[in-house]
Amino acid sequence: MIARGLLNIQGCKQIFRKVEEATQSLLDCNVLIDLVDAKCELQPAEIEAFANESRPYPWPQGSKIALVSAPESEQYDQLSMLSFCLSARNVKIVAFSDSKIAVD
Image (cartoon, rainbow, N blue to C red):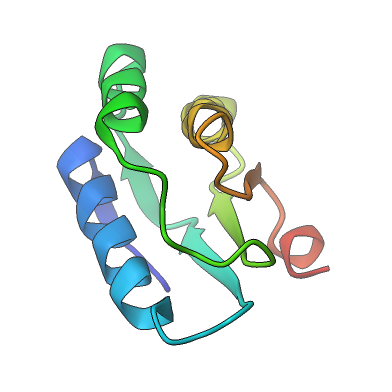
């Protein structure tokens, strides 16, 4: 999935709904969400609330999500916090600042 433009918490919710819909019938899959051209505006309190309100995602145990951010540290920091909070909810998700490393 490729997302561009402003990414706030509502955009995150929409992305995760779309990923959930697209992967429902797949047993184990790897999902790469390219946010390199997105401008993240995710506040820590919003990230924590999103992770806490979300039910554990129904993806199979072997499925993984890679979030690829723009190289700016602020963008990466926001996506890292998002992945950390969702990881605590048993979602296999990691943030990367390099798409080649994310694919590997």
